Length: 248
Ligand code: NAD
Image (cartoon, helix red, strand yellow):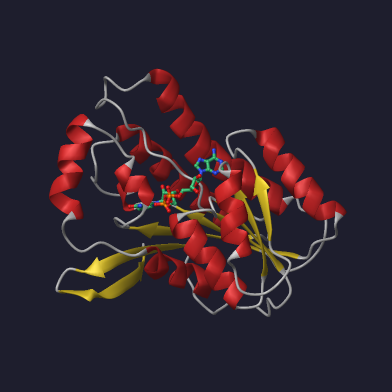
């Protein structure tokens, strides 16, 4: 797809995987809208992107109205929307399940699940024509046992199956999901105390994916010729300098 001058929306674009993806897509000549709940960090990230015309929008993806306003604003400005990358996400943190705070559990569901669900839907309803791709950011925690955060696992397993279900449907929208293993980002540092922190401490000392190593396959799905609805992204256990991307 020729994406030069076309618009990419990246939720969670102020940090980690979203930020690395925004940099990669801006480097390909796209105009990027960074949509993040941390408006200040999004402003800084947008200002640092290569090229012109990038924008930061403060948004809470758990609020459907907030996403409707964003997509409405893009349509009113007749933005040629080529890509939506749903990278906004949080972990449960706090006490280990079942001690987790119920309000926080519901928020994880609303951000990771509801945010990507509504954003994908609005991308499919976008009133202006044009080739368009949605890339959701899932997690290996949605397909195998990772940190003991069942609420997070629930949202990522649901997002994987939602994406496959949309891709198999007749909407005509190209929808993909990347499913990375653990990535060195601020998310891991804020992911919890107690059991989760102990679990993580044993693992984060080892080699982890970088945000850029996850952004590269997302870039290929948007700009290149990558195939496959759901792509697993993992470090090669035999050689951690290599990234293995496989279709799930
Ligand atoms: P991160 O914390 O570096 O970035 C997440 C971004 O999402 C932040 O900028 C944050 O402000 C934003 N955000 C949080 N809640 C939001 C909301 N309600 N509305 C809008 N923006 C919001 O974390 P990351 O590791 O880059 O995570 C990005 C995605 O990758 C998440 O969906 C995460 O679940 C997924 N993921 C992370 C890992 C990992 O090990 N770090 C592994 C697999 C998948």
